[in-house]
Image (cartoon, rainbow, N blue to C red; front, top):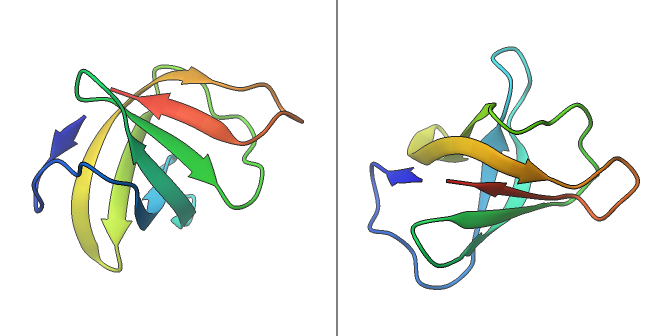
Length: 84
């Protein structure tokens, strides 16, 4: 996970995340983990998110950071995705 406009958060933050180039940014809770990883908890289930995809975290139009998805829960499971 690379933070570009804020310091690495130590508590959960509310933001938006964009996973695919043409997909809109959607609301998410960003939960810091160990080893510079975060867990993304989406408000609504997201489909076709897979490890290896890029995720960019925004606050409005400001890029907070981004990384590569390293794990995702199956469809129908709670919408949680881990990025590194």
